[in-house]
Length: 402
Ligand code: NAD
Ligand code: MG
Image (tube, helix red, strand yellow):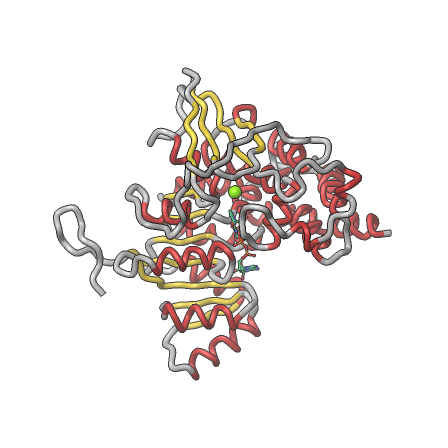
């Protein structure tokens, strides 16, 4: 396979890409973009958590040099299946195996698309290997914040945001990032499926309703986060770290149509917005090819039929998660790791029908209030705080269920 031509007409080798979380919503959409540019990209590593059959399908199609499944028993089944199918993909198992594939010598670019704090160690392994990281896994930044950004600098890794809001801000900022000319960043939020509902009505929400997002097709955890507005809270924290901006210079605005994906306001009053249809392949393709542009497969906006763009303030009383995230970021230390761990436990309990919708914010609030959040010197210390927060959150979930 020959690669694309460089500026002087020479043929360049295709960029070698690893996808962490290849079977998920972002992972599959990344593969869709890569499939449109076979001359430009090749896949060298694919990883997933548990569903080995889905990873097997991707491996047989993409023929990566390595694959890894976090679930050891599933990895053995995957290995046998691929061997019988005549594949020469080498299969690694367990969390160690996923971290190894994250740091492959052969890879230029690593798409970090594992969901939750499970992404922390593999994403950091890619950072420590100095890769170009396309970051979708926002929880990693929420949990490890300063340690993560410090590792990016020390290891010379390149960080490009895939989260649509952060990718939009990245596109609206000057090359050198946030400078003195920027007044504030404006994160847009669709408001999720329950926009306009009050707390009493939210009490009745079921998991089926919560995962049905009006504009975006996403994995179950981020869909629930979008419904509670915790997703915007996590993104608020993500933006503080990614763009090195204090919390007071980031605002959230509800924009139900999901056409404007976020904005940057400058001192002179100019506001730059990035717009597009709600399709994650746009930010994925933007980050993959930056600073060039490639086709993503996303439909273009049709301005002749666009009915209108609405903007309004979030309802903090009905959706307290955004305020809790802001509070955790202002507290500092490991408070954002506590917030994230409690939220992951509460969302899992909600999806299992062990906790009501309003219980998610309550569990996060009580976990934050019940645990000290010291500054952590390293990732092991942060992950200990994560574990402690999960123990407390599980106890609170049981109490809430009684
Ligand atoms: P998903 O649930 O669809 O997929 C998650 C992936 O992570 C799967 O491949 C799964 O196998 C893997 N995984 C789960 N647990 C694991 C573990 N313990 N070890 C290793 N791998 C594991 O999730 P998603 O919607 O694709 O979201 C992925 C990340 O991208 C999240 O952090 C989310 O917030 C972020 N994100 C997603 C979207 C979206 O549109 N889906 C948009 C912006 C940001
Ligand atoms: Mg987003």
